[in-house]
Image 1: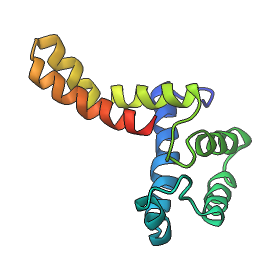
Image 2 (image 1 turned 135 degrees about the horizontal axis):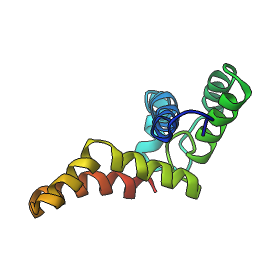
Image 3 (image 1 turned 45 degrees about the horizontal axis):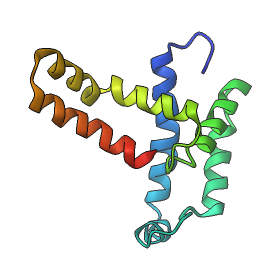
Amino acid sequence: RHRGVPRLFSHLQFHYLHHYLAHHDHAGDPATRARMERGQDDPLDAERKRAIETRETRTGDAATRRFAAYSLACSNHGFTIGTLECRVSTQSLYLLCPSGFAFLAHAVRGDEIGAAAHALSTVLPLWMAI
C-alpha cells in the first residue's frame, strides 16, 4: 500500500497491475492460451513473465516498484491469488465493485433473487481465482 493513497485506490492499482497488465498480456499470447486450454499446471512463459516484471517494475519510485513486484508475485501474474493479503485485497475489490455493492443493496431491500444473482456473480470469480 502506498503512503497517503486511499486504500480503495491501492486495491484498484493492485488489481490493475496483476489482472490487466499481466494476466491479459499472457492470455493474449497464443502459445500460453493453448497451454491454458490443455490445463497445464503452469501455462505461463518464463520469458514473457520476466519481460512483464521488468516493464512494470522499472519506473516510479522504490515503493511503486516494490508494490508492482509484490502484486505480480503474489498473484502469479493474475492467474492465482496466493497470499492472505492478496486474497483480502481481491475480495475487497469485488465487494466494493458494482456486483458486490448490488448484492448488498438487494440484500438490504429483501430481494433474495437479486441478492443471490449478484452474490454468485461476485463469489464465482473469487472461488475460481482463489
